[in-house]
Length: 373
Image 1 (cartoon, rainbow, N blue to C red):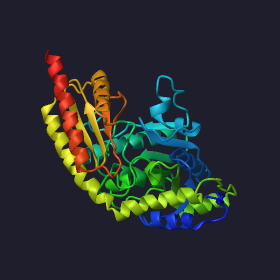
Image 2 (cartoon, rainbow, N blue to C red; image 1 turned 135 degrees about the horizontal axis):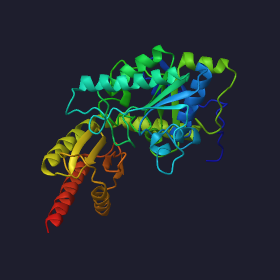
Image 3 (cartoon, rainbow, N blue to C red; image 1 turned 60 degrees about the vertical axis):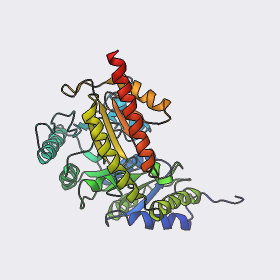
Image 4 (cartoon, rainbow, N blue to C red; image 1 turned 180 degrees about the horizontal axis):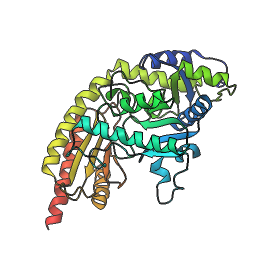
């Protein structure tokens, strides 16, 4: 590499090509791309645009959510600000109960999925009405399409659709954070929000992480009308390295592999095997309280008792360590750090899945045996 112009004031084919390719996977209303270097940058830019376009300031988020490491995003991420060492909730942040059907206020043992969807939607309405009653004006609703750091939470069907329709009717913009759930990770769809409903249309979509397969590149995608209003306000967006030719070449290469190797098909087939086998292990082991997720976005809620659902916090750490010793990298998350997260790369194959299941089963059997001795 002898000569490279990284300043995106001057368009390069890689940027334009990627913009056209990625928007083909979006609802037709989402056509404008702002390229950045990380998911955090994209989420921060969305806040800047939403405040400028709506004239409002406050933000609505789900409990346990995480949207990035920038100061602005730590302030809207309960996963961070509600931590014992966090700075606490700001007055301009409004937190909605996360629609967790296993540990939440309303559970699948008591309500149908349709009822859960409506009950949690009504909880969101209450928060919005209370904020408005107190004179607060909300500009943007952030939601991970599937909540990751909060414990691999899958929302009841149509929950996000109801939220979006209600909020958008009030002039509140809606953002689908796809940084951790996008690029066919769910198997059935390119984006996590599409698993909720085929006709759901957010105002913003943020993507990153998988976009560059490890290379720092991200994108905020929005509607033309929103981008135009932002431009009319006179505050232009500029990012020296956002959308640079090298980053966009990486992003295009990732799409090339996803498409040419039909990785969506692999995710669907391998994840079906994994989820089926994990359900069998759930019946076999008392420690597995819940298996949830889509595709390669899976959570295993480890408990002391299936009946009480008390989180098996210490045992979860032991399991994590033993899996690491077996050269299988997982992580723990959720409010109690007891949920094993399985989020492998899309190239994860049947052989890998069989090895994971066999190893996990053996570790749980060994722990059960030691507990009896």
